Amino acid sequence: MWPTTKFTEITKTILPIIQAPMAGGATTPELIAAVSNAGGLGSLGAGYMQPDDIRAAIKRVRQLTDKPFSVNLFVPEKYHATPDELQTMQSLLTLIADKLETTIAIPEPPYLPNFDEQINIVMEEKIPVVSFTFGIPDQQYLSALKHNKTLIIGTVTSVHEALLWQMHGADIIAAQGTEAGGHRGTFAHAMREGLIGLMALIPQLVDKVALPVIAAGGIMDARGIIAALALGASGVQMGTAFLTCHESGIPDGYKQFLLRTKSDNTVLTKAFSGKFARGVNNQFIELMQEHEAAILDYPIQNAFTQPLRKVAAQQNNAEFLSLYAGQAAYLCKEISATELMAELEREVKIILKMM
Ligand SMILES: Cc1cc2nc3c(=O)[nH]c(=O)nc-3n(C[C@H](O)[C@H](O)[C@H](O)COP(=O)(O)O)c2cc1C
Image (cartoon, rainbow, N blue to C red; front, side, top):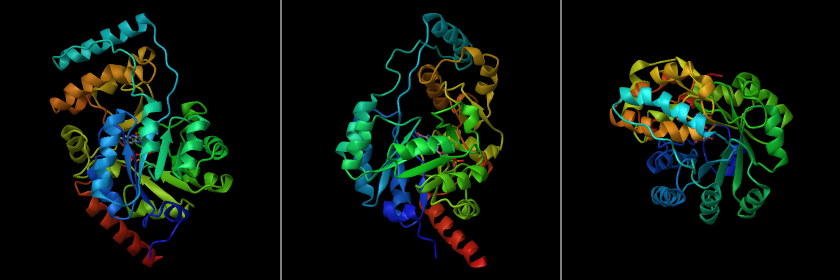
């Protein structure tokens, strides 16, 4: 029998498995619904989505499942770039754009969809679970979500950040170990202070914070789930494992790259978005490494490189895509999310019987 945890109890799920929210197209309604229908918690990575698109995706998820699911948003941050800095980046990216036979323009603000409009949709739709990364939103929103009886998940990379989220009323802590794919959720200290491995981070959080803790980073199969639960986690949040599922919406070049190269060569880079994120090393990262000082603030850098990445996806050229993935990407499988969930459920039971 799978253990019932505080997470499964309060989210009304059966399995303590969250399919990680992954902005940028991976988390299709089909993926979310497959995970929720299998007893886990599917999550929409809505950070880059326009409000109307969020509403449409929620509607589609609800057509596919009547089980709980979650929506994840990016808490806005301050950014700045001078005209000179913008021009320097345009010149640098033009060298790369030439390789793809395209051009690159200086992006115009706003660089991201409007957060207030995004969160209003989430509140209107009365989503059962909402998660945030990159910070803690204004108290007015947190109070309104609580009033709606929405559970709030706060992403952290240290005990310090978890205590801040606890003080602001989070119901669950998503702990991102340094192994995790995608952007670092660090918001209250220098990025390097939040590079803590899950093995060290989870027990500290469990001892110091009164909230249920979800473990995220490098968990790809039943072994990782059991290990996280043994460390005291109340559930696991798995991203990379779902990226190569049939239902995931990432470009085919990205999926095939993860499946074929079987790479464990992940790095932390700011090159694509201006914010540190973990992904598989490729030519774009290597080329930008020499120009680290010129990389612009998030989300300006993200808006700058987005058209390039779109062209690279159309050309099936993984060397210029952001191949975000965790440290255990080598274990990616070509499988449906329904099969993956069934496999995880089966294998956890087998390991538990052996213990
Ligand atoms: C492609 C990709 C996109 C991600 N986007 C988000 C996001 O939008 N919001 C978020 O909170 N976390 C995001 N993450 C991080 C995940 O929530 C989670 O921390 C991570 O996937 C766990 O590590 P793993 O990929 O090794 O399983 C993303 C991860 C990946 C791989």
